[in-house]
Image (cartoon, rainbow, N blue to C red):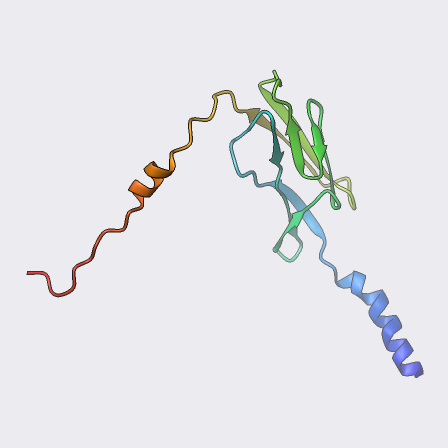
Length: 135
């Protein structure tokens, strides 16, 4: 019984030593500009000491922006927003010396109309393939 307790004790105290350290954090945005009137997901990834990547959430990092508000990893840009760009900062909670800050532009041109169902179906109609050898 003592051997099992000793084994559990050793495992509990050595597991934090095996955890990978965050070397740096990066923004990997899905777009080149943010949209007004929407929740814009700000993707932050950490590069670990073993070279692997790990996604970061609001549990791992503090996200801030002076002109807009965050809800988790989502930056909320109001529809009546009149600033051309925002500066977003991400700080690692476990080590505030690891942080990143980027300026991101706000989209100014409106989105075009979406294609109709008929337009989509016309563009995706399969072509018939003929069997046999080409002559």
